[in-house]
Amino acid sequence: MTYAAISSPSTPRRVPAGRLAVYAVVLAIGLALAFAPFLFPDVRAQEVAARICIFIVLVASYDLLIGYTGIVSFAHTMFFGLGAYGTAIALKAMGPSFTAILVGGGAGLVATLVLALLIGLLSLRVKAIFFAMVTLAAASVMLVLASQLSDYTGGEDGITYQIPRAFAPAFKLFEDGDGKVARLFGVPLNGRIAAYYFVFLTSLALFLFMLRVVASPLGSVLKAIRENEMRAEAIGYKVVAYRTAVFCLAALIAALAGILRAVWLKYAGPDVVLSFHIMIDILLMVVIGGMGTMVGAVIGVVVMTLAQFYLKDLMQIGADATAGVPVVHQLLEPDRWLLWLGVIFILLVYFFPAGIAGTLMNKEWRR
Amino acid sequence: MTAILRLDDVHTDIGQYHVLHGVSFDVPEGGVHVLLGRNGAGKTTTLRTVMGLWRARKGAIVFRHHDITAMRTPDIARLGIAYVPENMGIFGGLTVEENMRLASASGEFDKDRLARIFSIFPAMQKFWTNQAYALSGGQKQMLAISRAIIEKRDLILIDEPTKGLAPSIIRNMIDAFREIGTETTILLVEQNFHFAKALGRGVGVIEDGRIVHKGQMADLAADADLQTRLLSLTAEAH
Image (cartoon, rainbow over all chains, first blue to last red; front, top):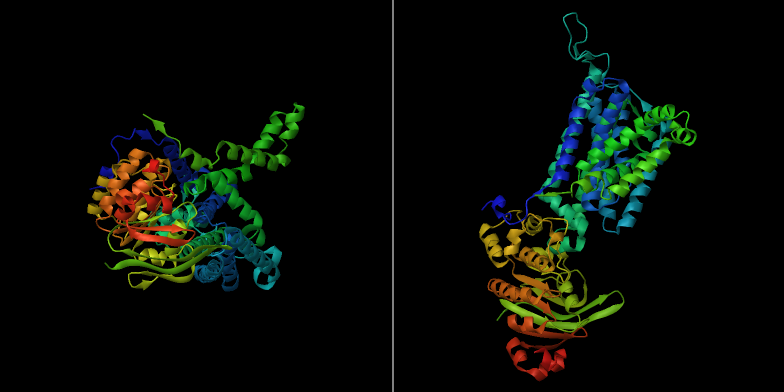
């Protein structure tokens, strides 16, 4: 007997239109990111594309926690920072090499695993609010440490360093007949493009891995734990062990995203890898995209990142176009972009209460 | 007949309240056995204490040869005890298939067992890929019971399975429980005496956290005075 044969022949035919639309959008975003260096060759657009790739991994790993397992943690940026600082410190100390990335990233991952295990085993037995407070405290301590241990971390200024030559803009990935860097569709095939594809392909692999996790029986167990821990225990699942395991897994993936961030930026500092602003961004992205959907992370990150980078530009255009209109012109002043970002967020929450992907995926057409 | 489950002077506190005051009874192996009692008598607390969801302060609970009094709930479940709570205990955000798969230790289904479940509860086959929250109350109860029997269990604890169900569904449940009771032992907590009478082999009556009657269901069913005294059942209720 196959499972397809089990499904009901008498159930009315329903087309999961919303689900298809979400998958189509995510596929389009994936294709845009895959060809981003050729579609959007300017430096700022590449920075946006790389940030989107890295944040998709970071936000999807947070969705594993909050969306799939119901764990509220504020320590996600701490693990992101551990991966980034480990890589940055090693690149600074050992020089620009892949060995330094492996050693520093590896050290960051080990530190992440140890801390996540400690926090998980000691705290995941307590109520959700106390666990959230423990993670908040741990993240605060890490932020203070990063600031205080300036001999290693560069303090508030952070660390700048060189990355391996293969990722430097001067590196010729391919040469043409004249010994110059080869071009494809007018875009130079240099180390910068290699760095982008290193970020893109690693992010893609990590995202696919997370999709595999949530589609596996483990994903069902996590959702069961989120719905009702007692019921999950009553059918034989050790909830604390599962929660600790998924907390460690999400932390390790966040640390890997941190490594990518450090390699791409050639800089690690509290503002870009550890601050609570990043944690708030992650939370907003998960909520906007849709918790417990995984693909919602893609949509949430794209919406938020594009708004953060381009809303000001868009408002400038609007302000110029409405130069003669008194109130509207003032409202569209680019300095007020945060106000509009807030308005957009409220509207999204109002019209998509389960997040964009979460709400759309429940829409069906009946035939 | 050997007892599959034995409770000996079990005391359970919930917060500051002393709910079970020395519950003692044996559940013989095989068939359906019923624990009857009024609201608040301690029926649900007894089942939850057996499952380790509430800790017994005193006394002993022995399942086969295992003292499970201090064991953790997942370990008790893995010994072969399934629990169907009063509120059905399904996972609404998962499909019927995912709910069933959760209860399968290997993650795979025994095809013969699945076919048997579909013959007992055809609705499970019909709504196999549907989200569980969208099922009716009766279907949710069927899912909770199906999940309990998707693997071979030695003992199934079922808490008030007829609560809120229509009479026609209750009649189907009686047939289903008779079928399930042929291969496993069921300890059923019920307030619906008609349902209990139709199924039960042995019966215990609990009141104020104490067992006040133990015996055969046939004897209790035949004794209207005893029913009135133990369960406050009036003649109209029969």
